[in-house]
Length: 141
Image (cartoon, rainbow, N blue to C red):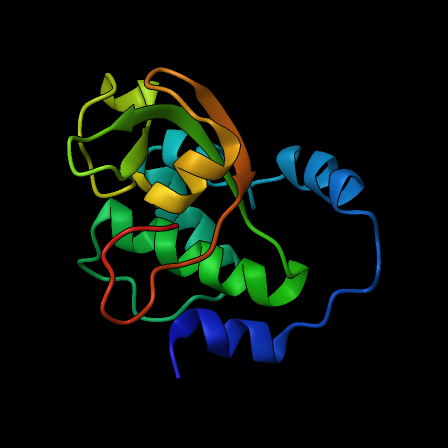
């Protein structure tokens, strides 16, 4: 079972409107963008406060991932945003201004089907619900 499937199995949504949940979560650090903007020291302190074990030697990307994983178990939803870069193969990534729109481990994968379904174009600002990477994946999606 993938991490996303495990989380989904552990979490039950309470019927609250998704837009309301998005707005309330956007104000908290469950929003991936807020965690990405934190310094490494802030992330370490936050991980300790939330009793996330064995963070010694973890990279920033790993800390963000582990904090989000624990929070999605509690809240049921996780959101991210960025500027879309569509690659020649048809898929894309949401890039962050914090990394000067360059490739980084915190990028969010956007499938070709999502790009077609919503008529997305290069440079579009995109925000929405995301899921953690499955076991064979490297990026949030």
